[in-house]
Structure formats: structure tokens, C-alpha cells
Length: 104
Image 1 (spheres, helix red, strand yellow):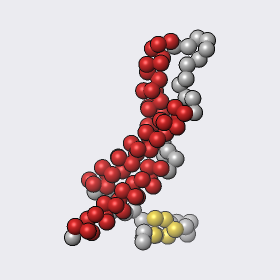
Image 2: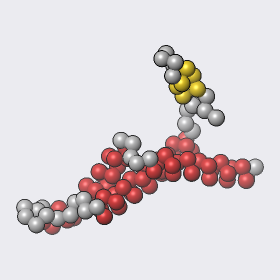
Image 3: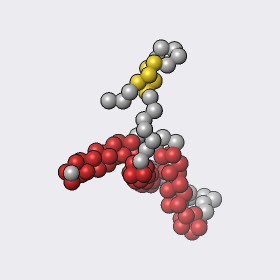
Image 4: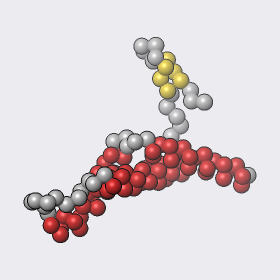
């Protein structure tokens, strides 16, 4: 259970947890990368970056549109994303904890 502290306005504030471990940071990075990949694929299927009929960028645009889509997906993830990274992170932590418990 997460400890809470009562704030100035009488609202419950979540107390800061212990500093994240190196393993937790690695799992969080993997989860964020998975969310970014998912978002890039969704942007692709939504038509983001498709060529235009007039005044398009031609071959150069076609070659680099996937890079632009990937960067947009990473930017979305960096700004909070859709919550997929956090769900993946929690699942990875639970799986890691279960694996550590089984080894003990």
C-alpha cells in the first residue's frame, strides 16, 4: 500500500516512494519504447505521413516519413502517452518480482 500524507489543503498526497532501482528504470524504458512502437503503428494505420496528391515531398518524403512517425510517437509517449507504458511497466515489475520470488 502506498503511504499518504495530508497536504496543506487537507487533501491526501501520495508520499514519494523510494528512489527507483536500476532494474526498475530499465523496465520503465522498455515499457516506454513499447508504447512508442505501438503509437507509431497506430499513427501509420491512421494515415499519418501519407503522401499528398499535390505539392508532396516525393521520394524523399516517402523515405523519411517513418522516422517522423517514430519521433511523433516518442514525443507522445514522453508527454504521458496513452497510459500503455505504465500498464506495461507494472506488468513487467510484477513478472520480475514473481521470477525473483521463484528463484529464492
